[in-house]
Length: 136
Image (cartoon, rainbow, N blue to C red):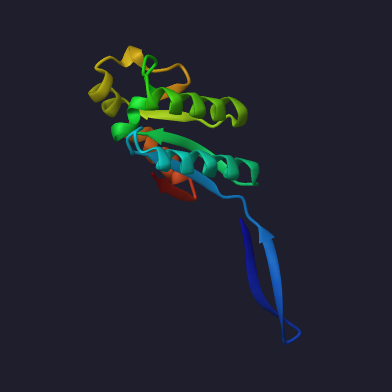
């Protein structure tokens, strides 16, 4: 992110720009069937990663926890493939809420190996360490 400051130098206005690295935490709650939301999010993640900013992690909860399943199909399987590709290319950490995952899959063993089962504590730590939290 590029910040611009106005300061006075010898009584004259002087603009000073500083490049600041932002840390983002992405919270994904929307159902895999909301294709436009996820398409926008995937493009945003690519843009953030190619800039000087950093993604602390992508945390899946609610209906989005379906994406983390190892045996999913349909929209969830396609989205998982794209998120895993981002994970492998940019080393973006993928987290899934354990409670939300169990509500959908009933078995924690069904989580894909690219996702880390997490809870409120991990989410809180990630949020504290981030400059911006974005929810989709």
